[in-house]
Image 1 (cartoon, rainbow, N blue to C red):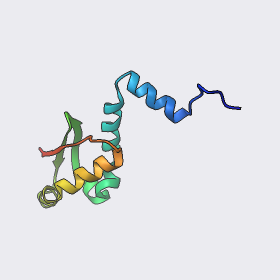
Image 2: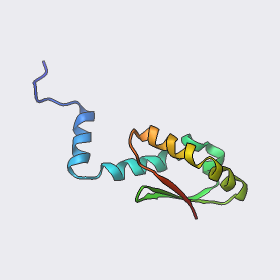
Image 3: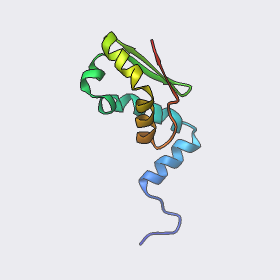
Image 4: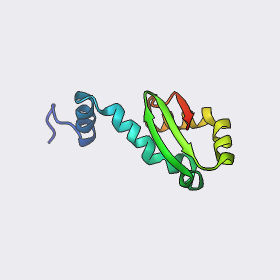
Length: 96
């Protein structure tokens, strides 16, 4: 029998992330982890550097052709990332 103040594990973890104000950082790390699923393994293998800071995704791509393709698909990638995270994590992509 469940008590009124009982929480699921998911709810407890989300509450902990919010209390300690680390939810945003946790979501940013999730973007880095999900990068191969978002853009594909071939692009992820050519990504040399990837991090999120101040709602900006910073990328270093070794292939100029792939870099150009990603520039053209910039808005679609941002939308895909934010849909996956269910919040606005990235507003801009910056190529290094």
